Image 1 (tube, rainbow, N blue to C red):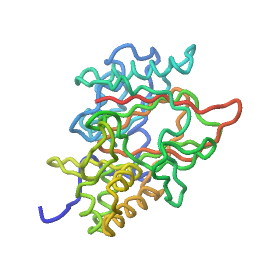
Image 2: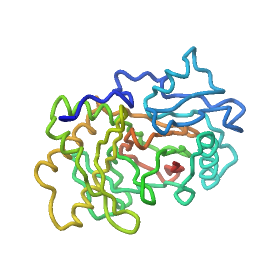
Image 3: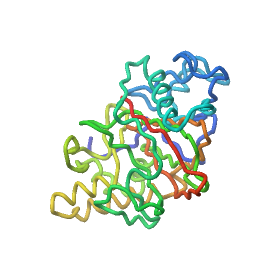
Length: 304
């Protein structure tokens, strides 16, 4: 291939072209007791989620569902009678049921209750905080769209976030299709896109010395692997700055990931389970404000 070409899968979408029914699924009234009652699996090589059984497809067939946007929200998971920690277990159990038919493996040690940011927040200008593990309490600004690095030698394929309690104000989820960002760069800044097909270092440390491209092609399927904080941290630890062309490419990526025309905002409710293809879709969140009586809580689970 002489240079990057338009990517078709996973399917490109923007907030203006994406229909709610393509990503929002109702939790069955009886709850989730078996894989046959909800979202069955996220395809390893496919663009998104396959709704195979137990959910009203509104006349859509499986082929259309497989060509999904790379994320889904299962709305209405019953959390009554569970404390915050029990909700983490509920999230892990649901993901295990959804992933089981395709042999998915949970990263059990990664099950967490998120009470604040677990990665550095950045100001809307894009100024990050390299070297910091998390922002100071009360400084919970925008967390730009990124993929989760996870634990071990490779990132998890699936991210699950269960809204236990939304913030008093703000904290909307940000979702962006890697394919959309790729194709916009191809049209507007192809030199930057070519740079992003090169290898970048994603941090260092035990189990985290990873080098890989931001965009990669596997036959007709596009993968995206982007986390500006970890890329900057990895470069800092080499003792040399990003070359100018590389920094320009990363900045171009960040500009698109701050564009409302590219990024979908989702305000999750208590009991909403957000499932993200971590190989194809980037996620983040808007600033949020807690109060003394309302504290934002999310359960997070990673799975292969």
